Length: 321
Image 1 (cartoon, one colour):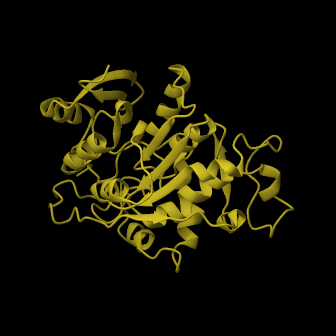
Image 2 (cartoon, one colour):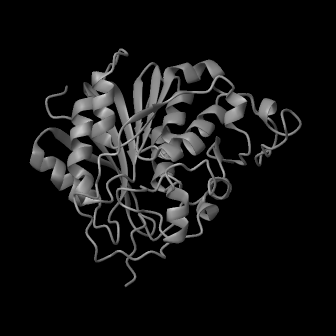
């Protein structure tokens, strides 16, 4: 079988080399059971006081004017105590970029992320003072773009706590502190200089991180944590999500999470491939799922016609203006 459980047969452009395990796992005939979709408990991750500690031992790369950690270096450093979930070792030993209910792909940057970032510019999406959620964030690049766009608050969620601690948080920090203060000569020298013509002053200040919160856990558990928390919570003006509809078994949880957390006048921007081989999901199947529930209206706002077709969908409540 040529089917695989990885989300796509193609790699993301600028980060194609970040994972060497593409297309090698074969679960094409296996449908994940409902039991496997365990309710991984929600957890909020604190932002350390010493921001530079977060960047220790990280090698940074840069694309689309965003810094992000080199994933393969994270994989190597996480094969010890840093990966309490054991997702790196399981991903490596099973040659899989996706283990349903265990590891949901956050160690890679998937190509639709960059599709959505391009769309923000083309459609002139404004984040100023908006409340934004990067759902299934992985590297967190979508939320970081919103942060650089002066969003009022940005929350990041990924299924795996290792992804938040080792990838999302360092990426957010690297984009909010001056490049010159953490690369090269300053500090302990463990953080490598990213490919760059010259040091750039960060577009965000470290103060921007005070508007961020980071969560790991399954969607419905994170929703419950947010809605029942003692901390004040207002629903999101914009929810961003990329390549999260690969598995139809997750559609109910995703739909309910969007319905619970989106402001009544809010918008969801979702990026996806036409079809995900081996796991069976895709844009048209999800679109049908959403339409049948009669909660959201959907519209395809962009089609990227290179190789396997990719789509960007906008969602809003049916009764919103």
